[in-house]
Amino acid sequence: MRAVVINEYGDVDVLTIAEVPTPEPGAGQVRLVVTASAVNPIDLAIRAGYLAAAIDGHFPVGFGWEVVGTVEALGEGVTGLTVGQRVMALEDSFIAPAKAQASHVLVAASSVAAAPESLTDAQAVTLPLNAATADQALDLLALPAGASLLVTGAAGSVGGFAVALGTRRGLQVTALAGPGDEAWVRAAGAVGFIARGAELPPAAFDGVLDAASLVAPALAAVRDGGAFLAVTDSTTPPTERGVRIEKVSVHGDGPRLAELAELALAGTLELRVAATVPLEQVAEAHQLLAAGGVRGQVVLLA
Image (cartoon, rainbow, N blue to C red; front, side):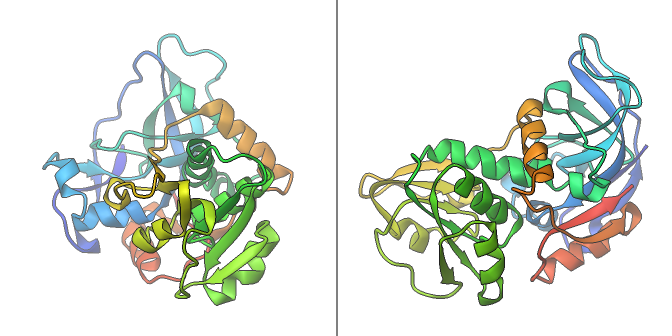
């Protein structure tokens, strides 16, 4: 099988399409024939070596978290799925020699959900990582209906879903994004807007979901005793003023993924695809995302 891997850190030229053994599913696992995966900011960070301490030299390193594909083989004990079924899933292992950016991938059956027929592969693949991250982040914040929430990076993939899902939970969402994104985030449900680069009001919000990883200024915007949500270990600040600090580590959840897909079909979640690129041109996908200003997912088609 083919898989996107690196054997060293560096620029896009270290990305390789390698031939690796096709794995057999173990108990509770499913092997998928991949039709779509996606490139995310964490992929760029891993490739460049910013997470080298966590990877600790375990090369080759595979790429890709979310996947749409068809079921090819079932491991022992897997029920409710059939060979040939079109599905979507999260491949949530942090380090693996091959992941979702590949021709085939192993995933936990518990992370799999049927892919709605009315969604294209490119649309469906926007859900398993970014929508799930936003959803699980809101679970961790655990703010009651009516509470105020600031979402930084609100026009990005995680932030955009957080605005819509937070609004659905009855939160009063203020979005921080670029000036050109105000209409979009308000359409997603934001009742307030702060332009990127503006000074944040101190101690003004019950919670902050810091999708843009601003850290210090975002933490200062949380009221005393409020809640702050970081998206990575490196952007998780020490607590102050009694603020509860949470960090989201997204995990596969097939039943909840199916519910998120229903919200997309109902129009609650907008599935944005910025570009589709063949798997063999993964370096181009990295360059496109690194250039900035991307609104929506950069999708790889296998």
